[in-house]
Length: 457
Image (cartoon, rainbow, N blue to C red):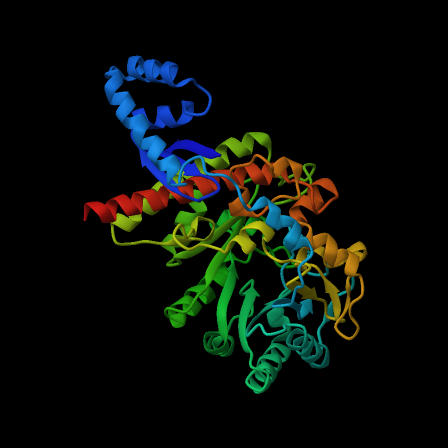
């Protein structure tokens, strides 16, 4: 199976199963697109007439396509599908945990999937004892896995900063005796960032996620305090100070775009102008009845914006001012192993979310949905049927994905988005699929442009 597309003046052909990417001229592009559907002599005649070249020239190009097919980098067979059944039966260990240290928040963001941090329940803070047990649970259930990931999450985790500090100190005190290495992430809205937090995060956090939606008027439409005051003027100076102090350690600025700003590249530009260069903008996921939900009309705008964003990245790279966009990070040489390409993020199996009371859920987006309460950090996973359901959730478990060229890039998509859209973790969030495919096309094009520039240099 191949996927061919044109982006930013390039003719690009992706061989889906092998992952090979080909940048070709117009003649080769047409030949490849006709290759499997058109008899050979008819193909030669069509391409010869269409491009005003001799049939011998077409045959020479056709021979090259034949050779690429023989090498297994064009029209290759998908040999991975049988592995999907084996993955569903695999033994798993827990390697990552989302610690909900605060089910409360100092902002009142209208589009928040977590119901303003409360997850449709009561406000709560995790105690050190619960957090300590959660870390012990992670160690006990991680098998021989050395690197363990912990994300301090909320609500707003800095509303429980003392517990965060104590939990990091505890993890550092026990990691060596258990042969583990903890890698921590902090996700924050920035309202409580101060010198102490900055120093601590830059010392202990492998990554920090900062929430900002871009332009002041866009950010302050939804990201407000309980008193209705926008957060932009408070958090931007704090973020700038934090990023300056962070040096070359990882962070990224995460925004959400909605029906009110499908032209999100303007928000990306604002973030760049403010001095931030590790960026992510996520489409809001919400019921279509919400006033901020993305519409079908918005989809056309958003897809065009992804193209604009890619062109912006090329321009800035050539000017010596590159920036990172999370969804365009793509490794065409190594990339994720086939296990990850098929099975995805590992929610419900290798990755679990822990509430302030110690309950276990498949991921942070399922927290509060009692149908997906898996157990707790004392008894472990009781609802093994939920874990088994997530084990079966992969790039080949959805009939809609069977013939999709992007399946080995999205691994079947986000289970939570699928559930919210269809009522099943094995459903398909079609709107999100369309946006994802456009992002991957742009990401591949960026790799092609960079490779050709390096070749010319």
